[in-house]
Length: 441
Ligand code: AVJ
Ligand code: FE
Image (cartoon, rainbow, N blue to C red):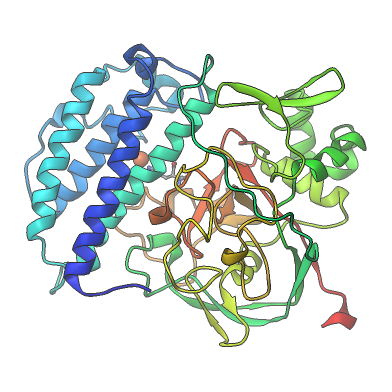
């Protein structure tokens, strides 16, 4: 549940910031310095840009805005402003070299922890520090970049730099393939989660008609059936934009897959392996997810359907923070936090299932929804328009539920992620849904 007493929140903020920095340190020390400044993909920043950008955002919000300090290095702000330079151009900027970037981020962190120690989390006019929000926001920002940096590692060529144990397999899942979510209103979004970001707010009622949703994310095995049935060469399954995109780029399989000797292989963090049939499919675009669903005679869930499946407790008739209730995630609930560098087999994590039995809504793979990223009724940009507001509109599709690569501080039933429908270097998968038959309601 969500604590409100200042000392608990202060400890929580310290732990969240420390966890994030440990992960950042690992992601930026497991390769040699030249690998930090290299461009591994035009889709991504050099790792050393993420590192100093993490420090720069922390300086901007915790030192300058919360504590009213002067800029430490005003001349670097432009370089680390994500809106000034597209990712593809960042390698040619005069970036702080690795040692300087580490030093800058560490210096900011030292001062930020002093600010945290003395910050008042209550009082009038302290909207940014209320319940430790600014500190939680900065921990979430760093963790989001830690996921981004893990994507850069996945795109990187050469031998693996990161290893982690595989998820412990649960007994193979044998339950029903879909679950009926009865129609009716539910509470979407939140007004009480202390560190929820602006786009998750406020809580509001949504009427969601009855629908069925897959019990687990769509697996590689199911996706291969779509491929074997000629899914990538049949325009019936694709939106016009999706069809022209896969044709123009000769896309015939998920990213990182390759066919060899009649088998599908994939490259995962520098290692090539057989595609595991029972694992949720990963590295598919919204176009691919949408086409698969149409081929299967189904559709992607709307964002509201996804959140109702993940949060609505039909017995208590209220929305919970997570599918399993209000308790913070543990390793028994979900595959989060880069503990594993892959999704767990479909049907894993029985302790993390929803009251209706839907599994793996949190963790494993980000799930594409059919919805555009739009503000909730009553939305107010906070603390800056560039976090969410500038992205609202039909260009971006919403992803929900988090992946194995996201930390629990940046993952909850209300958390919203978004990307262009062509993107697939992200840790994206999906599940499908369908309208309920009138008789079953
Ligand atoms: C919400 C994941 C789309 O990575 O562009 C990081 C998060 N915002 N720094 C992104 C973010 C500012 C954002 N996503
Ligand atoms: Fe950022």
